[in-house]
Length: 64
Image 1 (cartoon, helix red, strand yellow):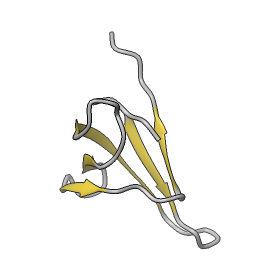
Image 2 (cartoon, rainbow, N blue to C red; image 1 turned 90 degrees about the vertical axis):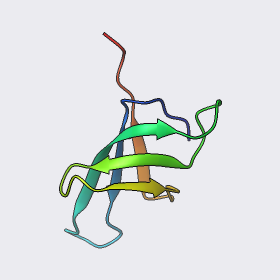
Image 3 (tube, helix red, strand yellow; image 1 turned 120 degrees about the horizontal axis):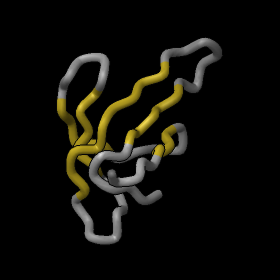
């Protein structure tokens, strides 16, 4: 898994009809883009250091 600042992290529930969480990656700790990431969650605005698991995916966004 690799990400850049501005990409979106989406975490899907492992339960049927469970919640999906997403947030903006605001900091990447490693030069190669590997985890962990600092994420600002869209549902709460809380910023957290995240080590994504297998239920997570990165949605990449091109720079303008």
